[in-house]
Every structure is written in structure tokens, then in C-alpha cells.
Length: 139
Image (cartoon, rainbow, N blue to C red; front, side, top):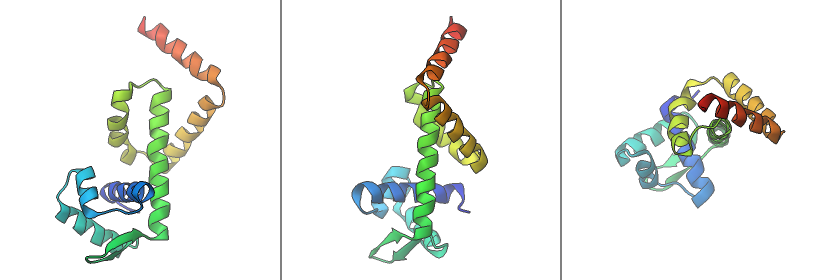
């Protein structure tokens, strides 16, 4: 299992490759607000652990293992954003809240939150009922 730090890198690399077709050390460093040398060290570690293939001066690509982990991490991130949106968290807080909690939940908890998100999304009335409860509690 990757560490939380490794997960952050894999998620960023996965997203960059999906959106731009490639991921560069400088893009990762900018996104994570770290020095390029830190990115290079992590890329080497991810290569050693078979999450990506790295060739010095040539770049890197995710392995199948890295892609699967990246997909799962993006799913987790989007699921948590959806969950927080459904329960009425203010939009300006969602990203930071997700970043703060995503590494602290088990995959079992993530799966159960997925069930809850699905439950709410299957019937708009459920979301409306929740909003009514929230409104009553704020009055």
C-alpha cells in the first residue's frame, strides 16, 4: 500500500496524464508546492515500488498498478467531494476538507460513503429532505 504522500503524488500524476497526456516534474512540484528535487526523489521511489516507470531525463509513465491506484484515488477524492456537497458543506470548504480527510478513512468507510452518496442521488427528495432538516436546525 502506498503511503499518504505517495498517494498524493500518484493522484496528481494520474490527473496530469489524463488531462495533458503527460506529467512533468515541474508540473507536479507546482501542484504540490514542493521543490522539483523532492518530486524526483518520490518519482524514483514510485518507480522502485512499481507504480511508475522512470527513465532519467526521459520522463515517466504509470504502470498498470499505478493506473489502478490512481483511478481509485481519483474516485475517492470525487466521492468525498460529492458527499460533502450533498450534506451541504460550503463549496469554498470542500477541496480543503477533502484533502484533510481523504487519507484518514479506510476503504471500507469510503465504500460505505459511496453507498450513502448513491442513496441520496437516486432520489432528489432525499436531498430535499436533508436540506429541510438543515434549514430547521439553522433557524
